[in-house]
Image 1: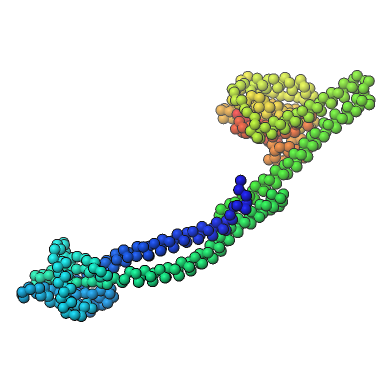
Image 2: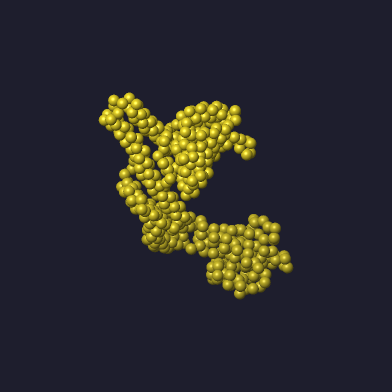
Length: 469
């Protein structure tokens, strides 16, 4: 595991990332400007000279010398337009237009001859032009021949442009790039520092508040709406804190309830043991009664411990379910006999068909039914009637099981929490059997089987617990 001192902060990572990106961009600019400058500049200049020659044809045809001069100045090109004089022996040329800086007549004639020789072997294209390009030293020359149909002779367009010496241009560019690089790095460092601090600020605040949680302070509220992702993180953390608080409250409630559940039978066991020792030791009848109380209270302790272990295993996924197809009516027949014999002061009504097959864990489904019946017994109050019913549901594709008591009932405010772990109604009395977490265990089993379940109750009139399969 890395030490925290070895892990870089968000701000430093962002600054480094921004600077790397900037260096890459500057490196690309340097490569394009320095390494490929000659080829790029030559390509641009050659295209410019060709376009100038084509424009010169149009201006010449319109006899627009002013435009030709302006074109030569704007594009920094030499333009010479001439024809070949075929009436005189030898190579004689007649200059029709010249913006050339070549002032010496002999040099001009020599240039024209070289230019004509360059065009001698060119083929005429589809629009009546013969063209050629030639790069010599630092000049880019372009030739374009346009046939004068009126006199049936070619008109030569000589266009040339001097390419600025690359070494001088590159030196200027390098100097400028050095300045741009230095300024860009400074600006990039400042901006990356500002943006990184701004981006990292909400995360830093969240980390600082999270340390308070680790110290045990749950009265922390995360607030940040600067960025969508951070906002979602704060909402998640706030929800986690609320769940932790619920867990803390539930833990305290469980400890209080378990302490109460354990204290009562332990007190009873101790009290009756002392009574046997001090009072009823020589009276067989009283001793038997007192021992029976001790046995019953010990049974309650056993129920509580076993149920808590079962619930813990269910919630941790440590219990394996054994699914099979079995007849639930057979189980109800067994329960009917057991409860009517054990609780003789209760009036039980069991209604079920002869066959009601269910696919599930038989032991766990029976545990659910036992917990629901025990819950009905515990909360029946004075009206000790319990109805257990298994019937076809309204859609005839499912079975509906329910346990109805006519006891103290549950208020509407308490109904949503009745299946929670160790929840006890304000009107609850001490259970005569079971552990106090039977409904929570039933919920876990039914959820695993995907069986719908619920409760309907009215305070003072009784409750109906049910599930479908």
